Length: 387
Ligand SMILES: NC(=O)c1ccc[n+]([C@@H]2O[C@H](COP(=O)([O-])OP(=O)(O)OC[C@H]3O[C@@H](n4cnc5c(N)ncnc54)[C@H](O)[C@@H]3O)[C@@H](O)[C@H]2O)c1
Image 1 (cartoon, rainbow, N blue to C red):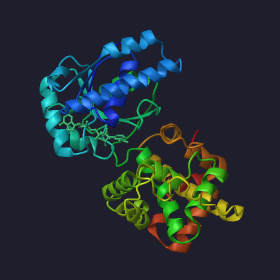
Image 2: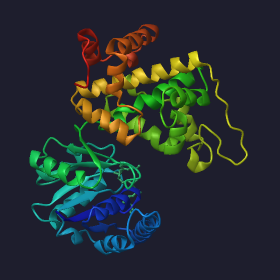
Image 3: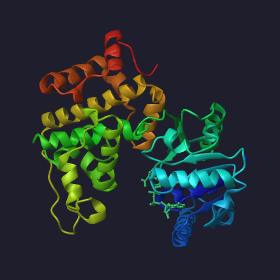
Image 4: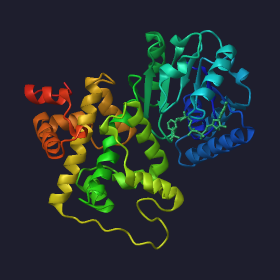
């Protein structure tokens, strides 16, 4: 069924989400307080559609219909007929509250309201609404047009019907939907933390350099990008801030402790590709760092990061953030992991993973390495995560 979809905020995420909804055949109203931003979003969407036509992925006729179905406005009142409005404005709770209070006045009583927030809780955003049962999180990944994963996050007040309706709707947008609990980082931004954090820790201890760690994770682990290449791609400012936010939100659990190395790179303006220098130098002619290709060292690095990732995925299952299948789907579709972490644990055996974590825990004596209770249970029972 085709609906009218509203998107508030025409920045990086809002423009992409509007395009995804329009490509799914809906009429879309994209609003922003900044008219220049609306113009930029319109140009960006049009040029993206043009490219899709050139590649033969969309017919010219279809692209024209999509363009006709999209409208741009500076007025929140233009969402009055919407079936669903997704907010994608600045990550600031006070500003989001202002927008949702106005939006609730503008829309019909049956309209579903959603936020694309990455780091605020759904409960805290929805608290400003008179009826929070029709409010939830719909978390797209950047770029929204390309990344298949969408996390759907009901808050404590969200009704089951609202979640089910949105799950069904977004599934029809050629996206993979996973439903997850309203906990910090949801699934992906929580479970992925050790990919960066443990890699930084290994570097900080002088065990290996950036290039060697990236080599181990790509060549031995099968990941598409190594952690340092990926942090440079995401931007050290963004990636560091996510880690710091998740760390604080988990009451400073040492598992999520941010790294001084990444902070110093951020402070120095070594943000990654966007500034021409991050962990690597992207200036033309700069020498490529050569990894050591010592396979024993590489295997040790890969296994250490992998068991930390599996431990985090096991914790997300234990705390019911998502089902094992949802967590594996999220990591393969949201961050392109070569395998689901829990299926990987099943393949290696929970006792194999536990043994390595126990070794790290015994060596360092740090809470960061404590093996998860569910992992222990699986090892003890010799059972699998994915049934
Ligand atoms: N950028 C990412 O990789 C990413 C990924 C997933 C989720 N998110 C989340 O999506 C949201 C938007 O992020 P973004 O990166 O697209 O931000 P952005 O800065 O690119 O865009 C934000 C837009 O909101 C507009 N805006 C600000 N205040 C407004 C208001 N009161 N009313 C209407 N429009 C207003 C701005 O003009 C701007 O165009 C945030 O909550 C962020 O956490 C971002």
